[in-house]
Length: 210
Image 1 (spheres, rainbow, N blue to C red):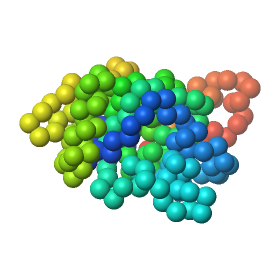
Image 2 (tube, one colour):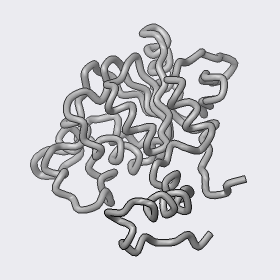
Image 3 (cartoon, helix red, strand yellow):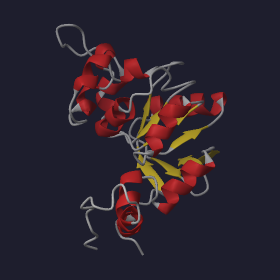
Image 4 (cartoon, rainbow, N blue to C red):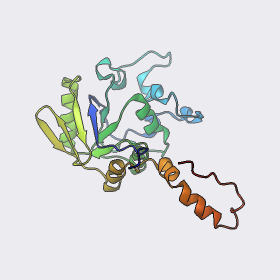
């Protein structure tokens, strides 16, 4: 068994409800933060222009509410993550502490970027999302459990079925969502193939140490 693979089968924790349709990536992480050399620190800047005024004072925003501090599951509405395809948006959300996102619908590239970070992106109907958001607002300390194998979310005595892209589901359950780690696991095969190519055969390709 490959111990380096990280399998995502379940996410549990409290819920942060974020209401609003068509929340784009520029709102999630403003363009000026794209100059960052690394993704470190982006969690502090998520929704920066909506969370703080020009003087840096906190505003009334769900990501600032003390009652949602430490939440692992984000529940959103329609077309979340639309706009530019910047990876910084899911990076910022992940580094804030979110480990799963449930919504009515998502921009396709945003959803793909989330999967590449090991963040499950699941959908439910409008009515079910509104019920989840309302329950989280009324019970901010209650724990929710998201199951990826048989997609659903459980809270209290209630269970809501969820949907997830099948390819994303398999990647999360098989631990193949991390493309870099997958490449590293195949480095011997890559080196063997590279050695057969005349235009790079003289390049000192790194050999496996595993």
